Image (tube, rainbow, N blue to C red; front, side, top):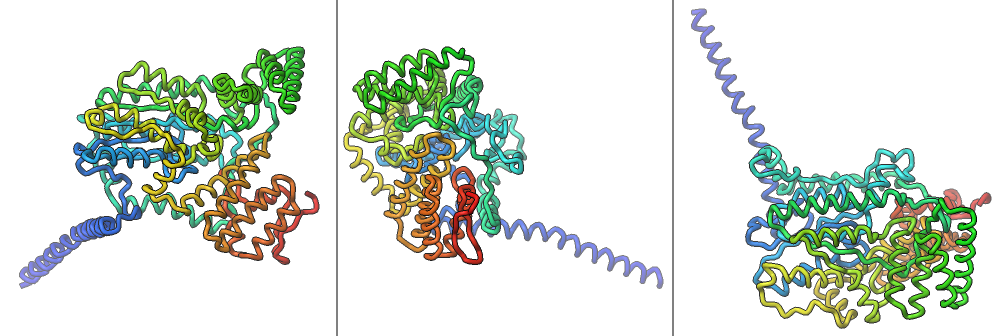
Length: 585
């Protein structure tokens, strides 16, 4: 009897164990089921709304062989900083309108602040098998690798911060050597909408919440001490050679990979605003005292003649100065301006370009990069070089001003992006599969203003787009003014964009407060602290909440507006709720 009872108990235990096993298995099955249900619901939401909130991290076509696929790489200008639409969007519109029988997919991989070497180049290598055409706009960021590596002017508490982190898919390998696990993981990251939402929350929303909860935003860079002439540029002249070699090596490797996969690369040079002075200039420190004195005499005499509009004499003395020290940016700039006044346009552009190449701050794309791009294109039959600089010069010759084409010294306007898109269009449509298609589209531009109006309409550019870009340029010019010896130019541009922002805004209390705060900061930078305080108090009286929120906002250098005002002797008294000039300022 005892054995029978024991046997029954044993059976009960075993049956109990058997019931637990399916439950343990069901838990992950339920989780997986809920995951796929959530993915399905997000897919339905995306299909119904088309909202970018529900996009995956990659909208790569489900049937890629049915598409002509184009990938675009670059830095802030390519990403569309200070333009209502980037040239990739304009190019996509033109191609789709011109070739309605072709399925065209364009992906703009450009990211603000990301150089080509080590960043965009690595990303490009990793997707080289996925696109038919690759467009490289070398942009203005190649010096950033050096600045980050050396922690140039970075505050001690932010030395470990790296603003250039990017997420890459696994590096490209031969198909038979790809790790299946990496392939599956990469596929999940690119196709999962849940993963995309989680990434966006981590990348954008959480840092935004942290900034709002924090009293101030971090200022990553100390203000450089800027004089008209310096011992060396921010990126040392000796480093320029390495920058060129790194860029070339990346481009050659990419071209060879592209050749292997039968892909086409289009690379351009980069137009910049040649009418803007260099930030500061670098002097040759190896000159003897006698040559240094001669240089000073020639430069100052040439400057005197230039200010008196005696351009023949100014040209002569600036030329003497450059015979002694040929790489001084401001002398090259002024000599270029002299030649413009004498209608010697080609000579003028040569010297204005040299001024950009030797600008001590090195934020504009240098000719060394352009020459390497042109050289590789000449060597590789699958790489095509597009001369955009001459195309912008044509626009200037046709009556456009630099302010029509550039928002600041390095970023093209919407019209500038239209010109870039149309020139690349001319190149790309001469290559298969476009070349065999019938097209009567004229990529040349006869009426620039009419083209701008056309694209504004078809691409739905509204007042808000213009307002947002005006705000970006307000922040850019006020932030970058501290890095230039010729600060008045930046203050003038800030005032221009403040007015533009207001004209295209809804004139809400927030808009009005923001305009007053930026006007106040501009006056403080000029040195008119009394006027600045009046404007800040007017903003605070208009909207306390908005004004305090705006003060926590940062300029493009990362410096909060409030701390910028503190640095210039303006503080806020919480008891009286008034801005005031500090006694020791």
